[in-house]
Amino acid sequence: SNGCKGGNYYSAFKFATTTHNGAIPSEYDYPFKGIQQTCNNDIIGAAGFDGYQFLNPGDEQQLLLAVAQQPVAVTIASGHQEFHQFSGDGIYSGACGPNISHGVTAT
Image 1 (cartoon, one colour):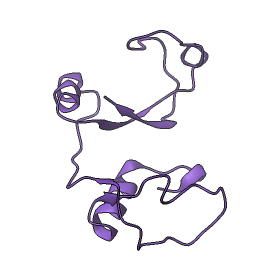
Image 2 (image 1 turned 120 degrees about the vertical axis):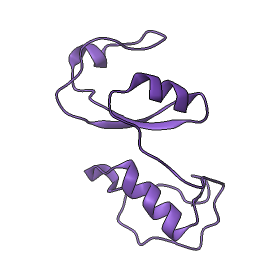
Image 3 (image 1 turned 60 degrees about the vertical axis):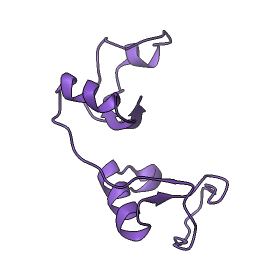
């Protein structure tokens, strides 16, 4: 991951699994400060995971099966004005922006 300069889940998951055995600290234990810092690798994780896998882009059935088992990290193209104004419940099915711009969690 690269903070507010962008990033990706793969880099974050790879870092967590290789540096912290999949452990992720809580925000309380490792708060965001909005300034450049060195990493503290001694923080104990509050939650964790033991692996990750990639799904085929656009495969809705595969995504449904994965979400039925656990939260899933996904990226979305949120640049369309219609998306910014969406405030309803359920699944947004309107227009999308041209570029991937946000990482979110599907549950």
